[in-house]
Length: 396
Image (cartoon, rainbow, N blue to C red; front, top):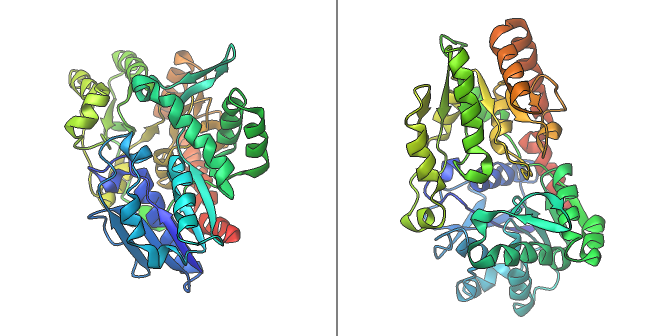
């Protein structure tokens, strides 16, 4: 079988911290491990590192100029130059759903009508469930009302793809509830077609960097993008208040977005704003990590993780990374987090008061901390890369 995968990249300046690249690397390697006779081709940016000897990279022009070009730019002529490969593909995983129709048209022109296409939805530009009959779009994606077009293209992929995949059960309900305001017919098709397959995690990669526990200063890690709609301001206001009551912890911000281009900064100034803002917090350290091994070493040395305050989070690969290292993650009791954390009441908080209570319990009760840590490690078993890969193979 010949499989094509399209690498969606949102962090071109630091691929080792890009969830799309990590997803693809773990998934494709595991598919080959289970089905070594599979031929895999990966459409990716230039200079993408080799993933496996059996994964053929198909580098294309830089489509990753900004958050809109990755969704709408489609170098048709470049893909036509790969016609000898694309016309024989059996199964395609398009991880940028806005481009599914383009790929369906391309395969049709090439005469490849046997192909099955899976659209994978990682992200939706909507903040929360509809209210008063209105879709609550993400403002940072709404330059010139373009966010409407982005969501409509994501829904269009339901009609065009053979399989519609997303990360979680929460994501399924979230997409369906918002789709209903656009078209009940599309919502019905989503209900009939959509399935949840979570992104994979490599336990072995995490275990290789394991270090002994050493918590002279308890370090909480915030490993998320410094965007306004991730609740950055609110969570650090809470942390600042907590620090005023106890000074035995610090917060490490890993800054996964790395070196952002001038174009990306001009479209969303929040990252640079929050970097400057956080520089004045005495208990906050900002560290950019570009090596995946160093990333896991950092997680092993930390005490616990922090989830973003993001009501529309379909998934968080960062949260699973913490769990793989047996690190508790304090998370809001909404979006995908209850599902990811098995509704663990010691980790999920309802409001600021509850956040303080859960954080203090983790800091002050060592026995409870150790028990929760073991529970967190067990949570990752259903996300192991080979298990996730097998779910894709079942589709193939």
